[in-house]
Amino acid sequence: MKGSSPFAWMVNGTATALSCVPECGMTDLVEATAKELDRGARLCAWFGVAEGPKTRVVAVLAYDADGVLGVAWSSPFRGAYPCLTVRHPQAHLFERELWEQFGVEPAGHPWLKSVRRMGPGAPLQGTFFQVEGAEVHEVGVGPVHAGIIEPGHFRFQCFGEEVLHLEIALGYQYRGVEEAQVGGPHGRTLWQMETVAGDTTVGHATAYAMVREALSGVEAPLRAQWLRAVALELERLANHTGDLGALAGDVAFLPTAAACGRLRGEFLNLTALICGNRFGRGLVRPGGCRWDLEPERSAALRKKLAGVLEEVAEVVGWLWEANSVRARFQGTGRLELTQARSLGLVGVAARASGLVRDVRFDHPAGWYRFAQLPVAVWPDGDVYGRAKIRDLEIQRSGALLLQQLEAGPEGELKTEVGPPGPDAVAVALVEGWRGEICHVAVTGPDGRFRRYKIVDPSFHNWTGLAMAMRGQAISDFPLCNKSFNLSYCGFDL
Image (cartoon, rainbow, N blue to C red; front, side, top):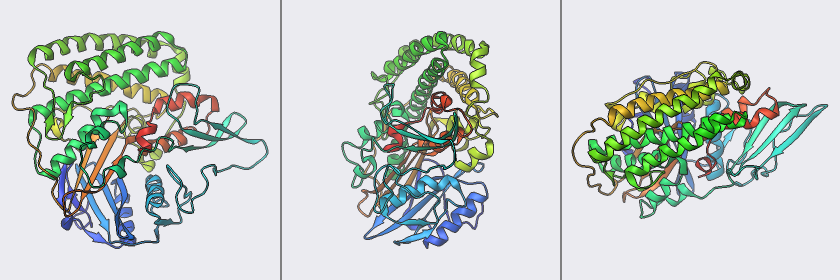
């Protein structure tokens, strides 16, 4: 981080006046962003804000080593601008999305194509990158799949059984969540945030609540921050346990597969013990939480949690003892550290490739300012590493919860949240169970949302899955896909 950088400095979960955000020409913004990324920053968000027939581009960077965020935006423009992707591949989906939504073209983008839906002058959705050569063939999978899962299309270029290239086409669940927030917040906003990705209800609701609180100049009471952290870690435990069971099922290791399905339900039931909903809906509100956890239920939850964690440790341990599991996991779907950094991966996928990257550690907000836990990292970047990260995080999140449930802070559960401040920008990062969730709100003179940007961790990580499949047998795809377990609806919005 350099003091002379043309970015406004912020910390996670805060807001600043738009008048304090540096404005520059689009070419200068691209150049400044590229230089900051060269120095070790990473791209959290890159999106457009309409201004009449023109567009402003907002850049949000994270400086993980310093624990700060940088925000800048361009002056209004239209037409083309110098492509950032050719220098930093982590920008490629952001620039495609910007072109799709606002028609501003990143000149020189290596594969300019719609991200979710048809844009003006876009290639047809059925236009895919092709590899030519003798014995090269193409395999299409989805959007309708054999399992009961979300829709997505995967187009493989193969030489025999070896995958040369995978292109992933999504957008089948596009709902217009971001567009619906313009002019908000309104009565439906919170419910829409809770369903951005249904398995990450607490994560997205917490990010939205942090944005609203920052724009209103209030902070949630400590007890509410504590309860949000408890719910976030329970969400992590449930999904990591379910993923390990699904990975076991993909290699036909039925003991762990069967047990983890049940144990995932036990963690969901613990969330229901707090708020009455297994996915945490209705718990988080701007200004605090809707439901409390009195000492009797807290003690019951802690006792039940300890028992479930013991069971999980036993059944997951069977995975690591089985030679057949290790043979399928180790070396499959490898993603190197340099690739993970270049693509801007977050969460489990990043840490499994050796990146020490975790919002709870790098940009702690809420209760994580007072209760930190070590970052789980694995060096190999394969299916085994992604599974192992989940196991380590179950252990560490479980230990944190057992400690926190002994005695939470006293005090109020919620505070009054006023209307958002005018002409401001707020940024909130939350470490969801998949990785970094980023919410950015830009308000107008009336305090209503001019733009609300959501970046689910899957937006960063789908390209990682495509890269991990290069050189793999096509039969390894279900296992690699499950080891990432990315959200289709969180990407599609």
